[in-house]
Image (tube, rainbow, N blue to C red):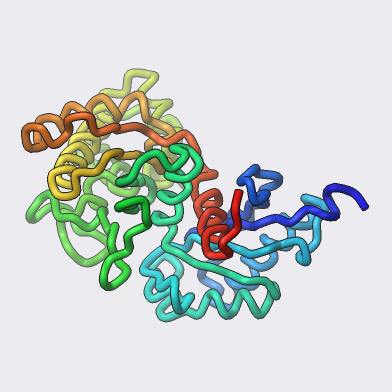
Length: 331
């Protein structure tokens, strides 16, 4: 019998509004294989569940394994999640409400399934794998299509009384500011997410300000269709409007970091997500300068602030750590 045939594994899944990423990990958290599928959220809950199950099965097949070797599956899902009931309480990106994700996947896969909020899962993965558990209190802040966060307090993932702790993107930073998808105005997410950045760039371009981003558009595209990497391209070519809008977003992020450090006094702050992955060198200095300006004296002393290096693997890594913890498996 080959080593591959005997091996037991854990599967981590990052379930997003547009894509599903599944990773096969050893119990020691070594990544063996990844598979990506589109979510096709508009087709409804049952269809998405079937696609998640297919993504898991495809990853298992490509690793030359069988589902019998899978000890468990961890899922990082967007929105408000109840890890105990296994339900996604509310996920606007998926158009779900009280969706029994755990139960539906266990029925299809025949293995234990554990779910958690996606940003909580990312924070867990960074804490255990990237930081090797060295930080007793960790704030994870993720800048992407939206903005989310996760908290490790006293070495444990903290979800709060209503299991919604970490909704950092919905701190109001500008009274009367831009409308947010949550219904409020002036939220952090409405000011510094990738969606907010491109919306502001599109508004100002429409008003006549010049940007090199228009040169990157294909037929039928608008500025809001571009990606974080396109912002980096425009910056490298000296695009002044892109630089200005990104610096504004970085300053709002710095204010958010200062607010959170004032309240929580974490040992470590980790920044991640697609925007940070693409633009760390451009954003982090301004974020740190602004955080120092707005934090109470002494609150940032010896606090470690860094950008995660896990990139796209943060979600699947954290989901795997979640499953390993719930299964009580040792490394």
